[in-house]
Length: 437
Ligand code: C2O
Ligand code: CU
Ligand code: CU
Image 1 (tube, rainbow, N blue to C red):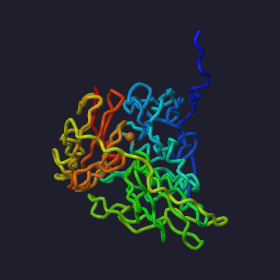
Image 2: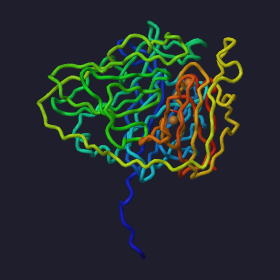
Image 3: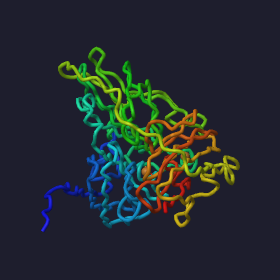
Image 4: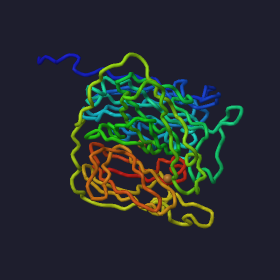
């Protein structure tokens, strides 16, 4: 009998998760919100490449829901990252998936994906971080950093703490709430050691709000996008974070001690003629507070990862957003892709497993649409026609403009979705089914 190596496989991670409605603090008040395991945002799930995760999910909400593992490269079918299945109110479902051995390290998140009520459920608080640990976490400066998770959520609550439902006009624009929280709190203090590094791990878990972030008197070094590590750190003064998007920023404690604001700057995403709250005044989201003894932190490596550009595509496709019947005219906006709204029983795009394709999104509307594709990350094609050395799963398609991406349909056949991550737009139909065969 051949001898078998023992304990070569890591044990599966068993994670009980319950969605329910409860009274909880939200910013400076209390709210009747939806959360995972009694928290808003939900707890952090931490994994590594190769892990098998079993989530014993219980839906204790008064309505149907499901889970989407935004950013993971796992099967879109069966009991894995299947955004097309539904867990009825009061029922349970066991999700299970295995991260491939070469899954990139990075920051992902879990949120519901019920067509028609996704925006509402996310706006009530359903969101939780899902970290994949890996090589990026072992880079010396990153390893030395004080790590802060920042889940950005906005709420619209009445005086009694009950969530308000937006009217049709606000849904067309994409709902924004005036109460903006970081990890459910108002202006939390984040610590940084003098001379040391802070690593800010950001998730935009708001249904529609765009964030434009900067830290007073500090430069930001972006080290990761949605798809994990950048090839090299990128110095930025500010960072635009689209709905659903994630980013890792490194900040060095190189200023005299004190407290510095992480600010949100106004951003005009069109459509509302400046009427979105996010187009209003800048405000402080959190503070970076110098604390503890000075340290001598290692310098950040100039090379973080190697990212190979995807090869020339086998095929190119064009997706026109909006502008179909009605367009912006006649009072009704059409949230269409190539003239059609979402139909779960129709395959909109059929592709071959393993193929590389180039997709161009053309925005025929006067407002921005952040487009997202499940399961496989992509590389954004720059002005010069070259793919960016970064993996992403959300791309900004500016109003009356376009964006082009290149992707490869790797490992998994099946049906999945692509959609606008302004979740009201997704609910209104700006979503299509992709079948990989
Ligand atoms: Cu976070 Cu289908 O989306
Ligand atoms: Cu997703
Ligand atoms: Cu949109």
